Amino acid sequence: MSLTLEQASTIVDVALKTARDKKQMAQTVVVLDAGGHVVCAKREDNSGIFRYEIAVGKAYGALGFGWGSRTSMERAAQNPAFFAAAGMASGGRLVPNPAGVLVRDANNKVLGAVGISGDTGDNDEIIAIAGIEAAGLKADPGGSKK
Image (cartoon, rainbow, N blue to C red; front, side, top):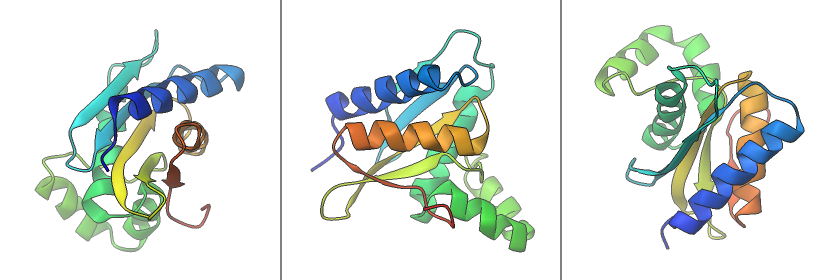
């Protein structure tokens, strides 16, 4: 099974609706498949111009390491030199901050990842999880707030 456009669209739309319900700042949501390709992305009006790249970096980093970006943030605090090198090795597509959430199927297989940027990392992660679960999939944010 791979991540479908219908699932990715549900993730994005529910994440954005949840952000509006919670009165969060303007959001950008990106869904990548397991190969790191964009399946779906939306940027709300007034979302900053860097937000797309940040959202991609959160999701791409989650796929690259096989854990959510919250784990990357925790590990980067302990080993900043490694994460600086990993950022260079990934062509700058690594953002070790919460809201890069792996998307898993019922058998725990990684189907892709969601990256969100616009509010705090914790708030971004909350809406990513809401979108993933609304699509009938498992969210894996990694780290201590799992």
